[in-house]
Amino acid sequence: MSIVVNLDVMLARRKMSSLELAEKIGITPANLSILKTGKAKAVRFSTLEAICKELDCQPGDILEFVED
Image (tube, rainbow, N blue to C red):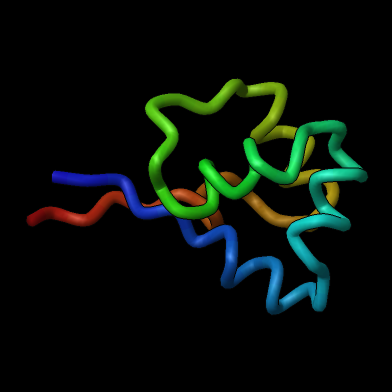
């Protein structure tokens, strides 16, 4: 079982760069990259909320559960 992060898909749909999103939500580009690549062990609700607000989406648009 794993959680897939579809942040790159939402960024493409909104025509926004990772750097632009990182600046708008107040995290470092490196931390956003860790989240985007699925290497993060956790994500704060406040970060997820900021991402969803900026990208005008729901958490389920970014995070997806996939069975192995």
